[in-house]
Image (cartoon, rainbow, N blue to C red; front, side):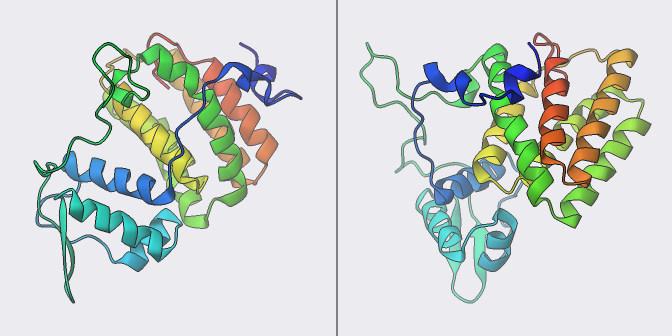
Length: 251
């Protein structure tokens, strides 16, 4: 697959055969991110969540969006808000009064309209990456903050120094997630986080040659984002993704 296939003169040509997507509101995206973090133990039971203002700043949304997401989180039995004290995580499992989010309500003899990310194959996820990560790189080049750039620079520096394959793979995941986060687009960030969580179960053997190539490609993506070169960021990410082994999904 060539770079032009992703960033050529007709960037919408690939979309002709796609099915329609279910619209996800900003509040839904924030809720899903919080729910995933709580259920995985990244935010432990008993922990107080950041303030509405802090969450709104982190997610680049309004406080009303955060407030709606927190109400939904509480209704699922995951959090409880105490007046004057804040919102606390009270459970890492959904309340029995609520069905699992995303569960199919379709009859048994019909395929569900939506599938959780965990139901997709690695091939499905790999084929979808360019349509998320290339535009995310472009927006990251345009919208990234100084703090987000510094974070990406630290990750790339650590990747170039480490000789531990497992740590490198983990840092690689952090870099791509950081790019999506720097796009300041909740949909890109949320979708890529879920996709990479699903692919994290892979344990590929990373060759020294591929590590060196990936480090160089990441450096090119980072340089484009650093200089706010949107076209260069798209091209660098496209070239990087064309080099990824679809069987190993290493980078």
